[in-house]
Structure formats: C-alpha cells, structure tokens
Image 1 (tube, rainbow, N blue to C red):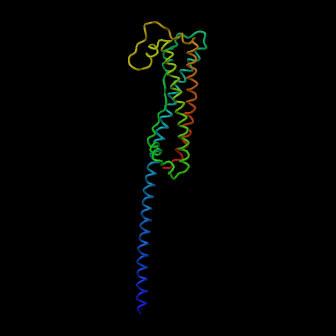
Image 2 (spheres, rainbow, N blue to C red):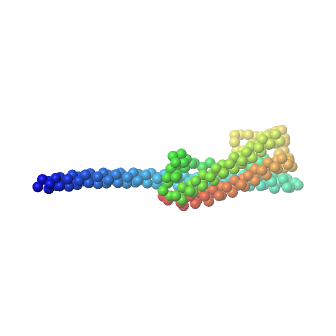
Image 3 (cartoon, rainbow, N blue to C red):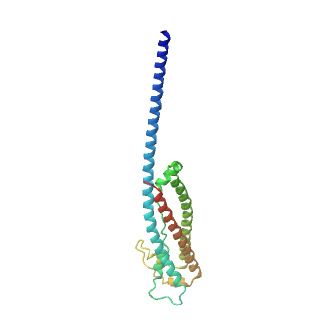
Length: 232
C-alpha cells in the first residue's frame, strides 16, 4: 500500500518535471522562432533597401555615362582638328576645350552597402549567391575608383598646361560658371592645335576616358546581375 503511494508520488513528480521541461523547450522554440522571424524581417528590409540603392545608382550611372560621352566627343573633335592643315573659321576651339575639361564621374550612394560591410552582415545573408556578388562588386568598385582618380589627374594636368600655354580666360568663358568674359589680350587658342604637348594631353585624357567608359559599362552589367539576385 505504502509502495503504491510512493510509486504514485514518483510518477506524479516525474510527470510534473516532464511538463516543466516540455514547457521550457516549447518556450525556447517559440523564442527562437520569434528571433528568426525578426532576423528574417530585418534582412528582408535591408535587402529591399539594397535593391533600391543599387537601382538608383544604376540610373545615375547611365546618366553620367551620357555626360562622359559628351566629353569624349569633344576630345575626339579636338584630336581630329589636329590633323587638319586648315582649321575651319567656324570652329570654336575655346568651347571644345572647355567641354573637354569636364570631369563627369559617377558618385554612387553606398549607405546601405557600407552599413552591411561595417556590421559584418554580408557574410550572414541567407542568400549565398548575393554574398558572393556583393564581395565581387566591392573588388570591382575599388578598381573603378582607381581609374576615376587617374581620369581626374589627366584633367588637372591638362589644366596646368593650359594655364601656361593658352588663354584660360577664353576657355573659361564657355564653362557656364559665373560671368567670365573673353580676354582682350588677343591670344588665339587655335594655335594649340599645332602644339605637340597639347595633343598629348588631350590624347592622354581621351584614352583614360575610353577606359573609364568601359569600366562603367561593366558596372552596369554587374549591377543589373546583382539586382536579379536580390529577391524582394
């Protein structure tokens, strides 16, 4: 009789313990599920913001390529003029040089991407393919920035030359900045078309512009591929 009571008590105690353990396990499971759901929602919001950021940057890139094409066109005209024995009277050399001195470069927003990098969240993304492509984009963007720096340097070197060898005021009168009037000193910048150093500076910047344009076109391909990988 006494043994039955003990057995009943033990069974009851074990049952209580099991209920407590099961309750704890269920609570932990629910907590983990909630944490995973919150983490998934946060990732979905981040990925959506990333998609928006790359989409906006892509639009800006295409616009800046068009601006770069204008600069390239004017430099090509200058290079063609250096081959002529006689320069047409209607040629506006000052305007061509001024337009060739522009530095249309792409400055994308990277707030969301930088936040992912700084927090180490790229490696925690659930989409492994997106991880790889974001890391690849970072390598490409570093190379792109190096070329942008070279492009800017070629412009600065050209301006330094023009400061000593031309009427920079005549050129600046077509820059659309302020109210700069042409110089009265009477120097004709058409003489630059027979200057080997000028030809070299234009050629150097033109080649760099071609290279930059190619990198920009590759950037479009990479971004468009990224956007198809980002699932929102």
